[in-house]
Each structure stands twice: as C-alpha cells, then as structure tokens.
Image (tube, rainbow, N blue to C red; front, side):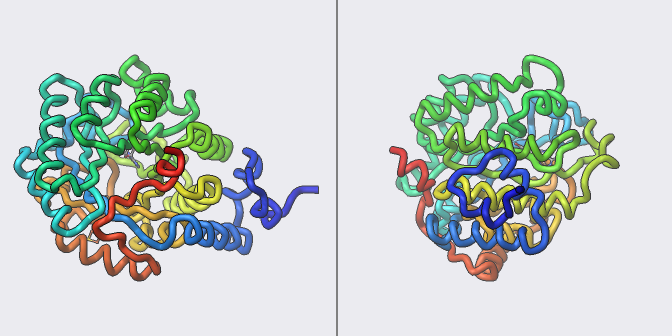
Length: 360
Ligand code: 5AD
Ligand code: FES
C-alpha cells in the first residue's frame, strides 16, 4: 500500500519518490508539509531572518543563457556598470544599516581587468566596514585561481546556481557550446567548496521540459554535494529571450509559485540547518511571496540596494519587484514584511550558514 504523506513526513530520509509525492501534495497534505517545515526551521535555525544587501552592479554578460533577460544577445538591454565608488557607497549603506552582509552580483565576465577590479573592491569593502560586513559574491563561472584570489581578498560566500541538476535539461536551456557546459558548472561548485567558501546553489522551478523527477533530483543533488546555502525560485519567462517561445507550455505562474514554496519546504526538512533564501522571483508572482517562503522555511532575504537609476536595467525576468524603490524604502518595507511573517531580523550578524559551521 502507498505510504501516506504523514508517514513520509515522519521519515529521516526521503527517496526520490517520497519527494515527488511531497511536491505534488495538495490540501491537508500540503498543510502538513508546511507545518513540518516551519517547525523544523524554528527548531534548527530559529526565527531570525538575515538581510543580504544586494548590489547588481553590472548587467554586462558574456553568457547567452536562453532564459535570461540580460543575455549577451539581447540588444534591447541598456548595459550599465556602476562605478566602484558607488558600489562602496552601497556597502557602507548596508554596514550602517547593520545588514548581516552584502552581495555583489553581476553578469558574467572573466577578463583580467574585471578580476583585478573585484579583488580591489572586496578589499576596500572589508576595510570600510572594519571587517564587519560579510561578503557574498555571485559572479558566475571562474577559474579556481580566480575564486581563490577573491576568497583571499575577503569574500567568504559564493552563489552559483546549478539551474538544473539534469544535464539534458540544462543543455536545453543553454546554448549548445563550451561556454555553457554543465560539467564546468559542477566543477566550479567543487572548486568553491574546496577553497572553503560557504557555497550556495539553486535551481529554477517550472522550466519548460522540467519534470517532478527533475525537481526531486535537484533537492537530492543539493543534499549529496552538502551545500551550505540555497536560493531557488520560479522560472519567469522574459519576452526578449528565446525561451519565451514555450510560454504556452508552462504551468501557471500561480502553480510555479506554489511548487517553489513546496521545494523550499521539502528542502528545509531534508537539510535542516542550511541557509535558504527567499528569492525575489517569488515576489514577482505574489506580492507577499517572500514572506510566505519565510514562514515555511526560508531564513535569508536579499533587499535590493542597487542604486535606483540602474535597477530597471537588471531584469533577468519580467515584473521584477522593487525596481523603483530607494534602498531606504526597501529596508523599511522589508522590516514590516518580515514582522508580518513572524520573523525577526538578525541585525548586525553575518548570519552564517549553521550547516557550514557544524561541518567545520
Ligand atoms: N526567471 C527566473 N529566474 C531567472 N534567472 C535568470 N533568468 C531567470 C528567469 N527568466 C535566475 C537564474 C540565475 C539567477 C541569477 O537568476 O537562476 O542563476
Ligand atoms: Fe523593496 Fe519592499 S522590499 S520596496
């Protein structure tokens, strides 16, 4: 006889089929899943929510991912690159507002000048914050040597989504060339872990061709590589990208949203002490999306503190929230939102992944 959802939720380990059942759960089963993950979250990571001030400092990108609005071939994008002084100013803002840490993100580049520039920026941000601000970077695929240089300069966390752990699916959503290889991405994650970064990954949920088995395998993959942080959210089609052609084959936005919540919930049960971000894409679908994710398992939120003039040009997907808000507005709004979700903001703390600490 088939196990009930309640029976599955009692187990210590989930098989792929268990995960698929949980991801498909509805009604009272879905409620039981969310209740379990909320309970586990409070028990293992508490109700603190950590802020990561996010600066998307440039949308210049050498990659051509078929889903992404700032892909190199999208000639409709106004490309920008925020001056270093402005980036440092944003870091000061994050530090003064006692954000746990700071995230530097941009399109992917790997030229010598860029690598050196990031190294200097990292050192500068460490300096102006008296070493108090934690720094996460999310700058795509690089050589091990580059990752090491940036680590030595002061970055201690790195985000690199695997996008999908299924190689065939990965190949369908990226151009078919050496620049976009699943193996390289896996290797990069390995490098980051070897160097000692708190390493984060994630996937998009509701992609065309993606199955429930794929999503279950994504969660098992995160568990297998023993990741410290995860940020994952719904795929949202962008009309200036090739993947827009599949828009009629996708599940509804509402269903992608719900499935994303269930992914977060199941992952929290599987990996109890990791950091899970409530992705901005959730809020693009539901105005209270990020708060809902916090209730059921997420414990990190990334307020956008990119200088407002450039926010509208960093549209990886459409309907992105917060592109008109100044950094101050965002902070106030986030506070109210987190309180609404019964969370507490972990001000002035790095909010490191407990999982990483427990391992080291
Ligand atoms: N919808 C949702 N997420 C997207 N990303 C890029 N394009 C989209 C999209 N259209 C995500 C990718 C990437 C992260 C920075 O943004 O997962 O790793
Ligand atoms: Fe940015 Fe509300 S979170 S304005």
